[in-house]
Amino acid sequence: MNDDINVLALVKGRERYIFLYEDSQRAEALRTLGRFASNPELSFTWYDAAVLSQKVRNNASESVPEMKATLPRRMNLPQPSDD
Image (tube, rainbow, N blue to C red):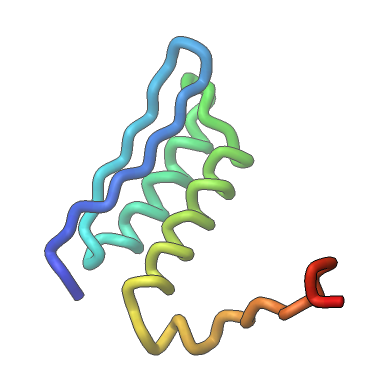
């Protein structure tokens, strides 16, 4: 794993949610998203947590070669120019 800082940002109206985490802190970042979603004093929803959680997981699969192999491959569909 590398030492890069991952950044997640969500803008909701005038509010800004910005999460910074290292690769080794993915699990804690996911727990934090859940804590924010369960806090009724915040406008951060479970939907917001789900969307950002998916971004954390996608980022993990891009940076860990073993996880990349388990991702579905893109389908090669014929293009109109292929005729």
